[in-house]
Amino acid sequence: MTEPSIRVSHLSKRYRIGVQVTYRTLRGDLVTAARHLIRTPHPPASQGERGTLWALDDVSFEVQKGEVVGIIGRNGAGKSTLLKVLAHITRPTRGRVELRGRVGSLLEVGTGFHNELTGRENIYLNGAILGMRRVEIERKFDEIVAFAEVERFLDTPVKHYSNGMYMRLAFAVAAHLEPEILLVDEVLAVGDAAFQKKCLGKMNQVAGEGRTVLFVSHNMPAVQNLCQRGIVLDLGKLRFDGPSDQAVQAYLATDDLRTGVVDLTNVGGRFGSGEMQLLKFWMEDQAGEPVSLINSGEPCSFAVEYCSVDGIPRRHLSMSIHINTTSGAPVTLVNTDMLNQHFETAAPRGIIRFHVPKLPLTAGMYVVDLNLATHAGHTYADFIKSAAAFEVGPGDYYGTGRPGHASAPVIFDGHWEIAPLVEGKTP
Image (cartoon, rainbow, N blue to C red):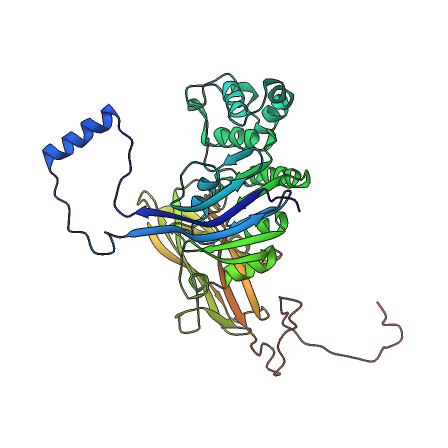
């Protein structure tokens, strides 16, 4: 039987809360000495703060050669820690990791890049780190540069690159230098929508070439489209391991996604200017109370809390809510543009609601993408893919006691009629 590309056995990683781990340097020793001289008082730590955090807790799984596996879970679930252990960036506290093949990783923007070196030099440096010969790197060089779209700045030190340029080159290097195992964290959110689509296409190509891919993402449709299998982590523990569509369902069924108000402050899968931020999302019933489930046909509201990062009021604000099935199929889009309801002025912090007199969705789980924009929708301030999920119950939309058909998510309002054909009146 073929040995797996990745074997993780009883892997655990512990962090001490409040303890700063450093390496001895002259600069560090001077800072430590200064702290002892100043003797800044620290508040007494609670028992919990004196404890430890298990970012990974007895995680075991195997990944076969050529398999594409999505790693999903809320922030703090242990996804990034897992990839860092696999990439040998951090050591596990307990357990064992076996990797068979050359490993390429893209865990954060510019991982492995040297700021003082040029884009050209960093391509060769990363190739050397992967154990590639110079002739192999040169064979892929033009393809990497073309994908990254940084030809004009190829001989400029990367410390002068914008985040977008850094991101494009880092992904191009990681994906094109042909590692047998590719580890990709949720870094695609740094780029714009067109770049994300380009990267996902390249990852699909890499997967088709029989290489092993571990992909951490909050973009559920991307996980389902790219990955045959999904692993759900929750507070460091492996909660589910199976087909990707079932993994997404298991993830969306977790309590923090389905109980009322969803905290968006640390959610991944977002991009935009950052001048404003979406903070929370929830559904409200007719009485204005947050709920985790709304029945078909009932009045409800979609609500989001936002803030202006610099505390300055904004003008010409617009909001969009994309509603999708759990498999990523679009159901509908509601936004302020359609109703010509741009908010001329918006307080630095507030709540935006979209009121629905009669919810036209059949029973099931739905996922929302949220987009807060400025300048009448021309500038994305904060766009979050797969921001939250909500559940619709089988209500009596038509008042007949018959719910909508489960195979079609949208319910139309209207009425039927029949009439005899009058000769000469045929359309």
